[in-house]
Length: 588
Image 1 (cartoon, rainbow, N blue to C red):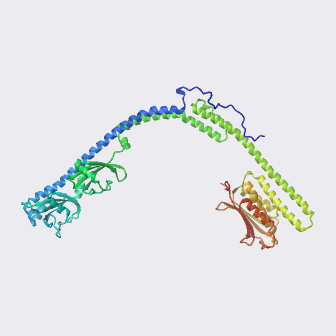
Image 2 (spheres, rainbow, N blue to C red):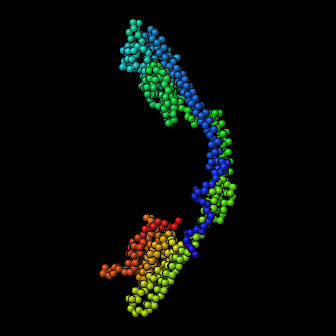
Image 3 (cartoon, helix red, strand yellow):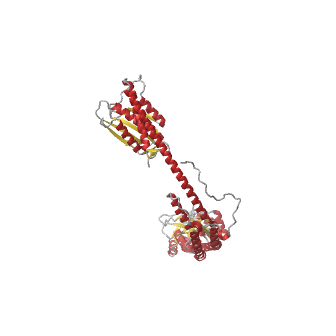
């Protein structure tokens, strides 16, 4: 029988490039080239035309959206501008009336009549030249002074109609945009002003009506949004954009919306630099546009994709998938150990599949030969190892018999006791080798069946049943290397032997417990304890016994430590602890 890894020779293809094979015709090229050619011819025209066509239409749609949004912004601004200018025209007309110029009860009545048909305005007041309220369309509980208001001083200094910032009307307590028109005497002297509050809600409503699907807002001279800013994703407009809107009539810019999506904004001035209308609309996305523009970018590409997909599906199934399924079945057969299966159907496959099939056949043959050789070698090695354990056991039994003969010829009791102890330990070692010999796996040992048999044999060999000693075993199903199992087994048998010899002297019965388990920190612990008479106190002047020295030797051999001492039941116990190595531990 040979255990060599040398394989028998077999015909092989030449691996050198000295004799190059002739180039195959185009229609006989490899699978990869065929698929690339099919995919390129099917998809390239569609991809190029669709990309060019879609990009052109997307650019046109984006420009159209900007133009439409600018037109809506101008329409919104025009409607809001009319409301603001209407306030100026109304106050200019009221300023020509004598009661309004003079103030008093008739003034309040005239203002109230003018306000009755104008729900857009919150209130109309006549302010004197000193900033006091001369009369009001809405009754005032307490007089209100505006001499320090910015809009009053600006109207007095400039002498023109103006629109102020957003404020809370002191009469109606509503949000308004202040409109102010100065009033002058016939001689041109400043005699006060007429003011009204344009309801912010009315301006917002006009913005929503005219803006359509776009979001509208009002912006003051400081660039602040006077309406809800979260819907627009913007809190302030740059001064440069407002200057551009004044110079060019509108300003367009792009920012991110409240959810991070791009938006197009259009800013249009309402009245000089006082107030602006702002409209925002989501910017068109190329992908969304492609999905929406069904006629131009969906139906035609889908038809081409369906045709190309059908061709690719059929070609791939014919040239690739069915052969891959066939090769997978071959691999499954090899995985089950059926190495005699050969890839005969692959003779009509493409060149790459045929090469792969040939490689599978070569691999299967090689694996089959190596598997057979390894199986024979492994069986032979196991047989040799078992034979070694068997012969060691037989030799130990012969040594035990020789010691037994020697004991009969010795008259000195002390010498006979020493020979008896040696005989007991040799018997224990013979039991270990017997258990290893009978184990199925000689490289790694499952401790549960191994130690249950070993403890049972030791219990019977030392007369435990005749002495009414009960043996309890608690062995975990742990896996341990066979070489490391020998010192552990010798430790257990030595501890059991000592217990049977010393623990139950003068007693009719007793209990011996053997535990082998794995701790939480990946250490193996072996405990042998009894409920016997207990260990006597050691005499420092006496030399340590052979059993203790053996325990320490076994522990050092395993890289661990041993301990001995009294148990809770009053007996004696011995413990061996050592770390597990890689591949050892509880059985799965």
